[in-house]
Image (tube, rainbow, N blue to C red; front, top):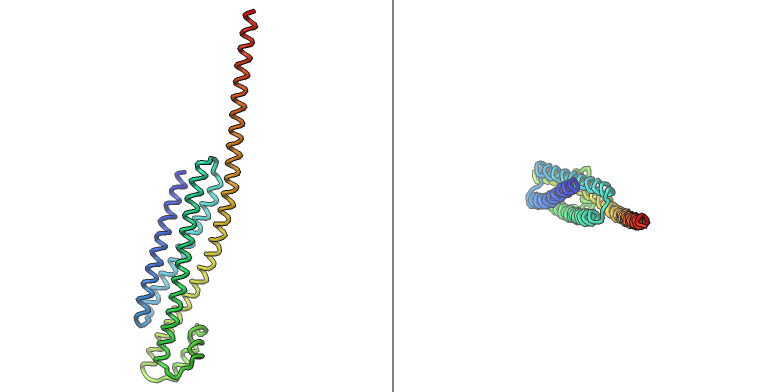
Length: 239
């Protein structure tokens, strides 16, 4: 159990780090959203998001390894301890991933709203169709450049840079959401596999304990028979 306890402690710590990363990303995004988008702020946000996604993958791999190691269980007591701890950690991680999905989705929606608002200020002549295409389709920034050519002056140039930074930000958020959706699906499969694994372990443990009980009964029976036989032989010698 020592290795198991160490593994679960590491996983627990990393889940806490993952939760902290989600909070940090959300706060950083809010800070960027309330100011003019800049490359440094966007770069830092991308860096933090990438690190959080990497950490989530590591936690998943550790939980999967823990599930495999649980197959070595041989006693009911150890089985109960492992099942409770592994299931608890898996559920905690699933909740954290779900939270990160929600944060990234909400931030993506906020970023789109900010992008549309910035563009309307820079180019009042833009139609609603233009705005929707800009927000949802123009990941490369080509369409935004074409639209902003209709506007003039330094305001248009500054708006173009800000709009394109927002576009890159949205694109990265969408990539993160896709990765998290895939991880969430994998995690659901892992939890299902854990349930199946624990059913197999429980059956194996029960068979082992049953065999041990039968073996002990046989040993006791053989011992009693041997004692009885010695008593009979002792009485025969007396006669």
